[in-house]
Length: 216
Image (tube, rainbow, N blue to C red; front, side):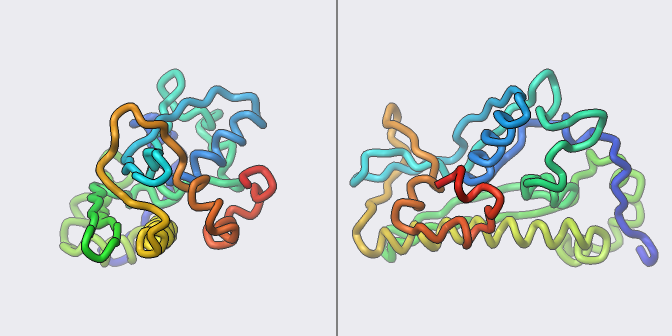
């Protein structure tokens, strides 16, 4: 693999492969940007847990739908928000979460996730290089050398995800929330919005600087 390094060709394929998984604050940011650019935007909550105290299902993630078969922010194979607020999963592609498993420790009142990452062979560049890439078995070591920028973006994504869990667990320990399995029919609230009422410093923690005044 020596001398090989991933270079995006701006083919736009990754922007039309599948709906996009987002962290809670990213959904709010993209909804704001879609409105700003007068674009259609549709998303739905992903994983949820029910809070017995507030009566809300807390949305830990969101899924942004494709519009007419592609990301709504894709124009002429270029991302309109590349330099504005590109989602973590897009910045980390082709090194993306293969699986996200959520765990709840009711005894210690702790919630966390275990995430498995890997290179997507659906990316034409990765597919072309796959013969050389298979020589490195550890996916994280491979990503560190082959997709260094994307690897760093994946670390940022997991850092942000863990911030959500750490803050929510802190509320649970204090008895301010009481987490249970998702309750069908209960109203859903974005986890960022929910935590923001207890932790006003969240915009700083998650580095959502350009939208602090719009996402309060």
